[in-house]
Amino acid sequence: MTNPFADPFVNPTAPTTVLSSDSSPDGRVRRSVLPISLLVLCFTGATMPWVLFRPLGDERRGFNVTDVPGGMGIVWTLVLLAVPGFALFMAGRRSGLILMALAGGMLGWMATISGLLLSVITSILPSFKLAGIDLTKTQVGQGQGVPVTMLASLILGFIAIQSLQRGESNATSFRVPVAPILALTPLILLAVNHHTEWLELGSEDTAVAAAVPGDSLYGSGLLLVGLWIAVGIWIIALVLRQRLVYVFAAALSAIVGGVSLVYSVLVWLGGKALVWLMPQSVEGWSSLRVAPGLYVTMISAVLLLGVSVATFAPSTTEKSVQVNTAASLGARTARTSDIVGAVILFLIIVYAVVRVVT
Amino acid sequence: MTGVLSYIAFMMILFVWCLGWLGISAFVGSLLDVPARVSVASGVILGPLGVLYVLLSGLIQKRGMRRLGRTSPFTASPTPFPGDPFA
Picture 1 (cartoon, rainbow over the protein chains, first blue to last red):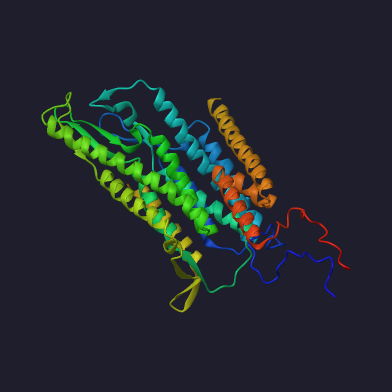
Picture 2 (cartoon, each protein chain N blue to C red; picture 1 turned 120 degrees about the vertical axis):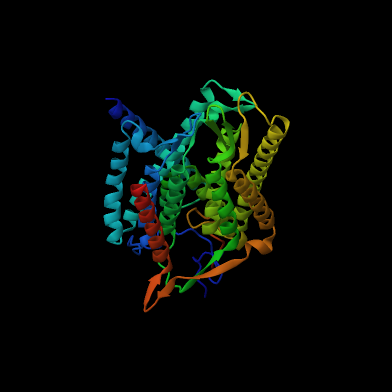
């Protein structure tokens, strides 16, 4: 006789995709270097420029959260949140990882909010236009600290969320889908190059130069928001690995790639036309140079468009590469995540040394 | 004094940001039967992306359940008693 109280809809042999609320009931996680290095990267990003001030000369100044009144207090508050998290994580507690991700996440969101506030402030400044380019907006922009802090905090956040859903795995290798990696590379290049100079205007008489970055263009704020959402969805695609997420990410990336391509081509054409039409002097500006950042943006946009369109084909989303969970370093064996974490820590140390020396 | 006021303002913005996204994420998670701990942590740590993550993972879970012809273990079965077991 069968059990009359058994759920008749359950097929015990069928695989399920149920989200587990507590896959490791004792709340323990494996200690790893990667989350620690990502947290350090978040704080390193907070010391990099978040806001760049480019006056009409060549002296650029960067400002970060520590330059704001009360900024050091904010950083120390987050350090005080991160230190117990680090201690708990080293003791193998999952709550430590969550606290670390929370500290990193707060820095990341503060960077985002500062960028949004910057957009609002520049939009209310009186415009000073030269040959159709608003030079007021070109004088203030986001620094490289914002993408570094945001990206590190996002990855750390997803590692923490994953620890809530998946238990420890003893697998010797895992498969990484290719499409998100291929899409994330041009997306990050686009995000970074959006804040670098695309055009450089110069005046030989007064030795004054004005840089025109991508973020000074009309509607670039919206493009940047879409770009970061696309980055987030591709990271989600790495975690969830479902066709629905791939299609969603590819659709948004195609829009971002297309708009970025149109922006860069128009600026390139505009710059060339300006030089060709008025080579001697444009309201006192005598030279115009297309900066490498514009070419990098153009190539990245084309690559992103290509990857996004290819992702709509199911055969592309199925492609993946096998990564071993451990790698041998001479006589010793180290986990891949630890090696990646160690490389990030090494790069942070190199950056700190270079900054101190220069 | 400016520093103290600025500190309070920034911390309040962060607090309201985290609390707001926590609420939205928990709401979306409850609609899609995502475990509360996952949806709350996603909202607080990842903000709007956390809500998106909860939404996508919840939809995928629901779709998987529908394909298998069963309901989520976090919700009550629409047919609590499948019929007369002694028939």
